[in-house]
Image (tube, rainbow over the protein chains, first blue to last red):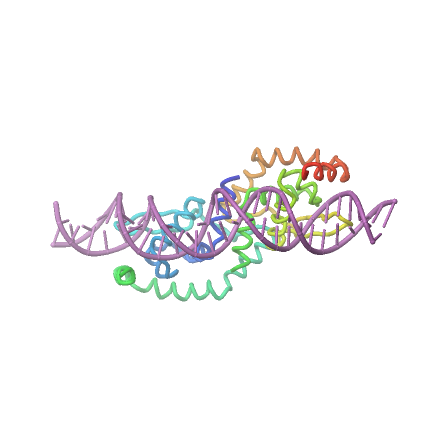
Length: 123
Length: 123
DNA sequence: GTCATATTTCGTTATATGACGAAATATAGG
DNA sequence: CCTATATTTCGTCATATAACGAAATATGAC
C-alpha cells in the first residue's frame, strides 16, 4: 500500500513528470536533466531520488557522471480511461513538446560544455 | 499537465486509494464510506471531492444521501510494469482485504442504522 | 598527495496537505 | 414554519513537501 502511494506521490509533481517523459527517449545524464528543468542540481537530484525510490528509474554511474533511465520496459500507461486520456494528452502538451525540442539541443551538446555551463550557473 | 499531477496526487493518499478500491465493487453512499474509513465525515467528504475533481469518481444525490461510483468503466490500471505489480498486490494487501470484509458487513446494514451510528459517533 | 568537478545529502524556509470541529447548505418529516 | 439529518465547505493546526544553498561524498587529473 505504501508502495502505491509512494509511486503516485512520485508522479504528482510536474517536474518529476517532465523527468519521466524526458527519459522515455532513452538514458540521460543528471547534468542534461538539470539543463532541461533549469532547477538547482540538488533539487533535480532529489526529484530523481524520489522517482528511483518509487521504482520508476534505474541509475548507473560512469566516472563522475550518473545516468538515469526508465526502469524496465514501460508500456503505454493506462489507469482507466481518465488516465489514458491524460497521458495521451500529456505527450501533446506544450510543456512536454517544448521539453522535447530543448532535449534535442541538449543532447547535441557535449557533456563537458554542459557541465561547464552548470558550473557557471552555480556561481 | 495539471490534470496529470492532480490525478496522481489524488491517488497518493492511502485513504483515497481505499475509497477507490471500495468503489470497484459498485456504488456506495458517503455514510458507508465514512463507516469504512472511520474518519470524520468532513475528511471523507474532502477526500471524495479530491477524487471527483481528478475525474476518478462520479456522484449522484438521492434525498439527503450522496452516492459515489467510479467514473466510466475503468479497466485494470496499468502504468508500466511497476504499477501493474503494485495494483495487483494492492488487491491482495491486508488493508484492502480487511476493507472488503468490512464492506460486506456495511452493505448489509440498512442506511438508517448506519446514519444513526454516524450521528452517535459525531457526539 | 592537492585541486577540480559531478552528484548526493543535509538543513532551512515557504507553501501544501490531511486531520479535525464548526458552520453552512440541502433534504425530509411533522 | 420548526426540527432533524446527511453532506459539504470553511477555518485551524500539525505535518509533509518543493525549492534553495551549504556541506559531504565520489571520481578524475596532475
